[in-house]
Amino acid sequence: MASPHRELPVRSRPPANSLRPRQSHDVNSPTDMVMDTDDYVNVANEPDKDPVAIINPDNLEPEADQLQDLPMANDYDAMREIVLPPLIDEPKILGDFESTWTVENWRSLSKKEHGPVFHAGGFPWRILLFPHGNNIDQTSIYLEHGFDADEVPDNWSCCLQFSLVLWNPNDPTLYTHHAAHHRFTKEEGDWGFTRFVEHRRMFNVPWEGGSRPLCENETANITAYLRFVEDETGVLWHNFTNYDSKKETGFVGLKNQGATCYLNSLLQSLYFTNAFRKA
Image (cartoon, rainbow, N blue to C red; front, side, top):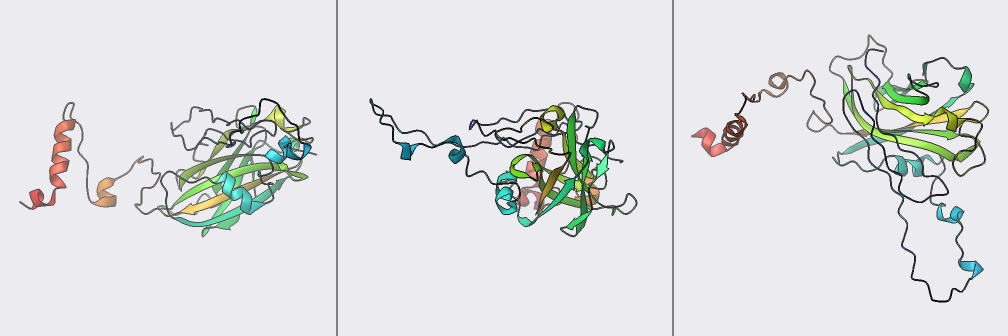
């Protein structure tokens, strides 16, 4: 594939035996771009206790009850609220979509696998999976457009918030998910997570808080949640690589000649003062 696979911080479902915030940990990316937010589970403060504790069985809250608000992976509407948090940019949402791929015979898969193509937002999409890791000892999962290599429109772009959820189809309470947002283009047609989940945690051992492994009987589901947002300015989440401002907007910027940043700022301020410019 022409474009490099982008690597982003990961996020996952909080373990059932912990209600502390799970912090994202940064990893180096080829483009030095970080497109993720920290994930928190809020817990109400406990009321002050009486000097003498009176135990009432009716008031006991086991951990299972405390976690009852966590949705199951096959409850797509509820999961969407969890895995697609509000964006800082607050762009207008154009529509949501999800698609699930059941991956079988996991350990027998080749190095690189593609999920079935599905259409959303007027464009083809698919999941790109490195079941044994993209040169790392962790499963790597990405979202990519589903165009054939020679059929991608030259000026095509799509601004998308997305999340990928890996879950056990026999027990939908067992899952992990990571989210990001990206401007998909012909040059940057895939985006996702090189460090999605460690191999040693996927097989044979119970997943956090459960009694089954995440990938059971060599089978697991991957659900892609897509949220299409409006690119009102035409440069939302743009990396400005090879960007021709004169061609796109009719304007050019001012280059710093070494110590001219203050003068550049003054000239631009004067230029955008209508009365001064007309005078």
